Picture (cartoon, helix red, strand yellow):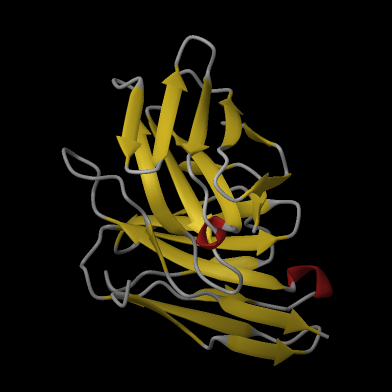
Amino acid sequence: GENVEQHPSTLSVQEGDSAVIKCTYSDSASNYFPWYKQELGKRPQLIIDIRSNVGEKKDQRIAVTLNKTAKHFSLHITETQPEDSAVYFCAAKREKLTFGTGTRLTIIP
Amino acid sequence: DAGITQSPRYKITETGRQVTLMCHQTWSHSYMFWYRQDLGHGLRLIYYSAAADITDKGEVPDGYVVSRSKTENFPLTLESATRSQTSVYFCASHRDSHGGTDTQYFGPGTRLTVL
C-alpha cells in the first residue's frame, strides 16, 4: 500500500519567516495530495490540496508544490504568523488517503 | 464542519468492556471513515465505507467492528476494549469522488481512555 513520509517532525520558525514541510510518497498512482492543519484539541482541517495534473497551487500565504517524477510534495507558508502554529499533516490518495506522521510547527514571536 | 458530529466526545472505560463510538453526517456523503490518532503515528485508517452496507478494512482494523445500515451513520465498536485502544478517534466523510471533490471533512473527535 501507499507509504507517506513527512519531514521534519518539528519545526520552529521566527514570525515573518517562511516554513517548508516536505512529504514523499511511494505509490506512483496516487493522484490527490491534501494538507491538513490541526490546532491543539481540534479536528484536522483542509488548508490546501493539489491534484496530480498540477505542479503548483497557491492560496494567499500558502502554496503546495508537487514533483510527480520524484514522488514528493511540499507545503510552503510565507510571512508566518503566530496563528500558523499547529500540527500539519500531508496525505496522498490513490483509493483512500494515507497520512504522514505530522509536523509540529511553532512560530516564535 | 457542523455537518459531521461524533458522540461521545470523551469516554473512559475499562479493559474488556464493549464501547461504541457514533458518527453522524448530514451531507449524504457516500464515503465515511474512521481514524485513530496517536502521537508519532499521525492518522491511521481503521475502517471505511463507500456506501450503506459496504465496509472495508483499513490499516489497523483488529479489535474494531463497524456497520453502515444508513448513509448518515457509521458507528465504530470496540468489542472488548484494550489499553492499546486508548486514542483519539476521528470520523470523516467525503462525497463520491466520481467527477467531484475529494475533500475529506473530519468530525470533532472522540477521546477514548481505556483503563
